[in-house]
Length: 331
Image (cartoon, rainbow, N blue to C red):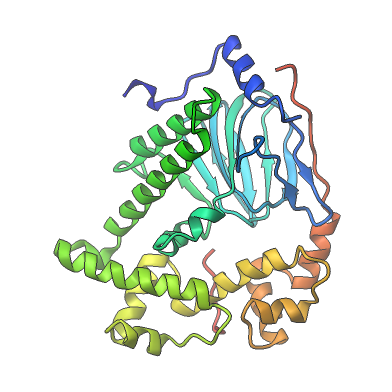
């Protein structure tokens, strides 16, 4: 398929890009908590930006999924202290809620997708895909040979639909985005060692059980969750369930519960009217001491410092030109 690779657009195409984004000044505004107030395209939950600005952005976060696809020259994103150097042909997914900074070379351009995927996360079964969004996902052709072309094609289609201002634009884009998540999810399942040698019907049985567990965690993270009880509820031994869970998510059961609760806490910390104790309880931690300790293990600072640090960050914004795998023991 000829349009799998994005080529540097001609000048007249840039005019189209800016026309579609005529409701967007090019500024990425960050509130006092360093939360970026995402300026979606009017009436939608999507913004796709053809960015050729040589300025980066200091540390910030937002509730949207961000996808970066360099077209010409490199681009860098630093997330939780790890820097991802992306070049043309690479795709970087930055999960919602992740503190990150962006660094740009003096020349070059890239497409930046910012999308509110919260409606998708409420769909039945999406919790099984959630582990893929627990950390930045850097897709290179040589590392994802089975799905790279399809993922690239879907993202190009999404971009084309957006900039062509097609009928049912938002609906079409989210349907393509769902296909993308399904593609990544199936690829992930195929690479789970324990499932690879199973018959298809047995794989489906296991994955249906697993989806029910992930859905349950997603809706009951505030409660006490016991590994042995959950394993027994789907007919697995504690050992068998633990091994499969670690292979599928990359986390131990306990560490994933902590990860899920910390993600909730990160969002709550942006609400200045909530105390640290209230946030700990709402996120499902049994005590403020446990919350402080686990938060520091995962984010390298206490919740209070995290909140203060966010308040200090300033956004570097430039107008458009004319054109984790925690190791913790507390659940």
